[in-house]
Figure 1 (tube, rainbow, N blue to C red):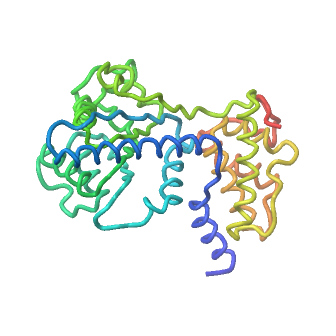
Figure 2 (cartoon, rainbow, N blue to C red; figure 1 turned 45 degrees about the vertical axis):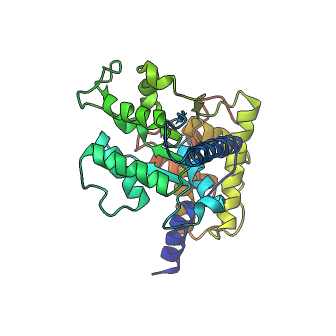
Length: 328
């Protein structure tokens, strides 16, 4: 490969490793610590009773936000930076991050959990047997907490639920009832992560939402609020620093200089993942022209040739001016 191709390949690998700390991430970290301790203590109490009788029921924490709001990244960051969780052990899995299959059913839910545990026969058996094996893996692995990601995949047309309200989909109540039983039986607490499409899970099933902790809604940042303006600016500055830290750019690009933050807020609507994607595309353009840093023109072209064609925005503020509340 040429030097340019090497740089592009390096950049694409390193982009996926960026972790920019922000207050929302820290809040989720604290919640994970609390939930893990609840799971550990309840399991220990059950063990001390000789593994007999009923276990203390658990609750779940919903984390809801648009794609790109950092939901899954927060979980990944916690796992990566917590030695007790990140150390792989064939026997112990104190925390498990599970990504649900599309059009989730009870059987695929169980299979997804078993696959995350590394069970080679994760698709073999009935739904009930697979769920029992998943619960057994949780006990054997001393799992304090399980994260079920992409929970909106339970909103589908399987015919098992109640209309969600005009979107043509139905809630897979069979899945939510299975999750509810998991919590009632005290297997371990759960974090459920999903987009706004997952809200019917909280609103339509009274028994389910009564087992819900205070939800965390990762809404797009609102720069009219001082704290959230600071978070958006910190994200832009943090991305700039990561480009240098990971050896992608030779020097900082000034991503909080001039009207760049305002333009980026216009394009992203306050969703930090969208801002990051625009920065990535702009960075690749800079690499292709042999530059040491991203220019405003690179950002302009990224919006024009990536964000607009993909329908993320229909307006290029770098060319036509900022149309939304500015971030500066």
